[in-house]
Length: 285
Ligand code: PAF
Image (cartoon, rainbow, N blue to C red; front, top):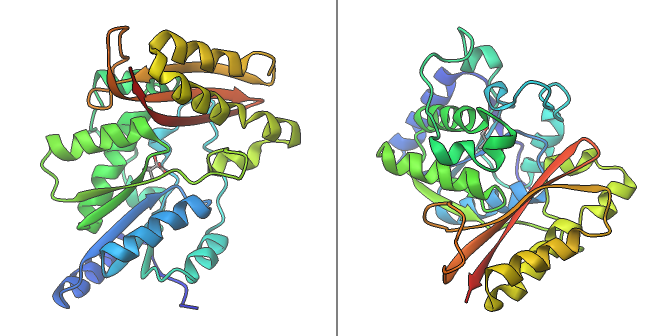
């Protein structure tokens, strides 16, 4: 059993704490989160513990990545529960800034834009979302200056865009990708799963069923892959499919019929008012 992390609320305090750790020769890993932590986040922290001396978790419900009518107000916030959970996982610091600490004059005039890929899939459903994500991630990387930052495979489009930003802007940090953690029926862990009622929760496993069906049909080509996924959604009226696409890992552009090789199937659907996303790597033949 280790102690609860030290909570730092200001950027100045983070810089002071990190400078002291650096002076002692220690390496730093950052796991950025929106809070409402679950076992998926703990997988990040566990991997970070293998890679760096000091673990920092940021907990910040970043308003600039939520659009009008989205769940910014109701997004679950329970810092105490989050600290309890991290208490047994040897995290040195939680950076939990206020909105005014991060955005003292309102949303920043300078924004990192996610470009065309940022307007597709999640970006089409949530305009401006990825600009908000990239801008806050750039700020967090600048504040914490980690050697390693963890991002989950679960948010595949976010991961793609963050890695490209880090590359494009020459940010000196290594991205460690953390596999998706799933419930026993395949549902990917997400802080938003707690919005689902019992019927929606049962229906939610359709996303991972569709992804598995797609992956096991991939050796028969793109049409068979998409048809297998489509079939999984038939007869599940609670799941409103937004998109199911197969994209190239290096560009995140949809593959065409002739494409052969590694690909990622990405899916988004809403159940009641809850939007869920998931993805699976596959190999098209
Ligand atoms: O994936 C998330 O939890 C958020 O988008 C992130 C990366 C913490 C930025 O607010």
